[in-house]
Length: 123
Image (cartoon, rainbow, N blue to C red; front, side, top):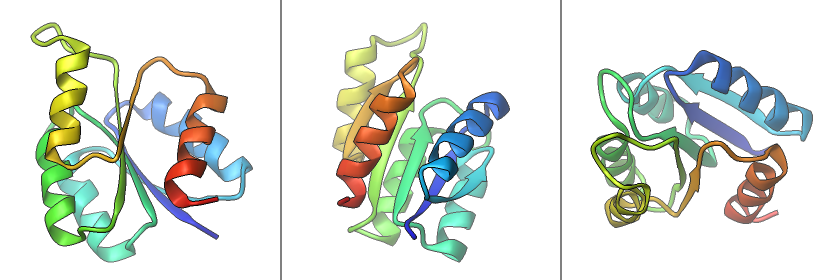
């Protein structure tokens, strides 16, 4: 069973994603911010990380960079609903430059998320 770490400060989003991924057969663990996410990653070594960009404690780009330093092979999917300070396309370009394997703008359908997860974990 593939293990997925979801890092997002939006509890409703976490619950929705966890339910969809669990129902599909994945083991899911969560963290409310990048700081705890990096700690969970180190302890649990998931197969995939799904991370928001804007979070307290440690934001997403810094989290992606740190995860990439810990494990160059980890698959990372960045999701975000945008920012009033930056265009969505610029944010996602930066996320990929910092080490994200794929990006997905919020809102997205569960089927789109599951397809992207399958691609990233090699199923």
